[in-house]
Image (cartoon, rainbow, N blue to C red; front, top):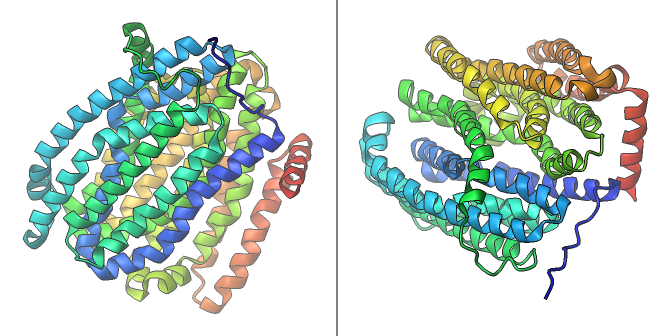
Length: 507
């Protein structure tokens, strides 16, 4: 019986808006739950155990580096084959990907399980009273490695088909469970190993759901196919460079916590990582938008539709428009918010970190746009080489600043790194698509000048020693920020597109 092509919605305005909203909900719902759950977890576990739990969350997120870029490559080639309607080749490639990832996950599981005792007792400054349960916790996390690695490919298959409703129907409960399951566990005991066991159980259910829906999303995909060397080479060719970024990117993201835990204390990890985990989630807009646009950009390149850079340019401006007021609010109201959320002690220790990181979130979010465009064009090697340049500079800056300014120095090092990353990624994308730039070639310089000036003013106003003035000033600056983006950054055609986008949302 001939295979029937799946129905994939065209990337029109309604489809894109609906998918972006789904993605934002998928990343925003866990953030709201985290706001409520984290204070309860800190009280239930104590700052030292919570510091270890923060590292456990980090390890779960960092496990994806073990997929050697194959998850990202699977999404890319799935989008390409769907555009070409090459379904038999696509099925062979997907099964090759799934089987390779399972084998890689098993290997990584053995390595992490063996290293856990050494990391806990020799590298991290973990009190002797909780070392045994910390070793057990990291050992349990190792067993979730094949699951975490395999989830990325199964999810990518659905995203390549623009099935973001299905993706987030699974991802939203999974993200919420990441906080609710540890809360449930501490009502039984504050032993970290049980808390992590609950996390692993949640991840397992998530993986099974993604696997079921992905294998039923394309004709003939439920029939297993033996892996092919040609498919494996295709995946590794693109995924090899993605792996470099997958290792270096999270390493630069999470190295700060390990250095804080090594140089300072586990309490300092909590004071740094808690505002970090919250404020970086404010950048959900960029992944939400670019996760939807990634398969669209690939299709545009594959079918030579000629609207690639227009999508890139407009995505950058709209992300800036949406994020500017959010970042201003975090700058202006950091002291008040942290005091209400976590208490005066956390506010006193974490305010500076919260403010510095909020500025970094803006540039980190903007960098997602050219980074995604570079990968869509199949040039993951260029972004990886940029990260190779950034890594030693960042580690040296981090080590220099942590000893002089504590956790505020760590936050400053992260801010400097993400600004550099944005500049490098935009420069690479500009060279890569020089023929399509049009009038948008000065966009990066304009954004840097606007952000530096406006955010500096907001930071200075937040230092006014009159708490009663923070809220009205914050509201005023948050309203002024998008207005200035509208007048100074957006062109007339951008404003027209934004009005149409708002009309689609209202409908």
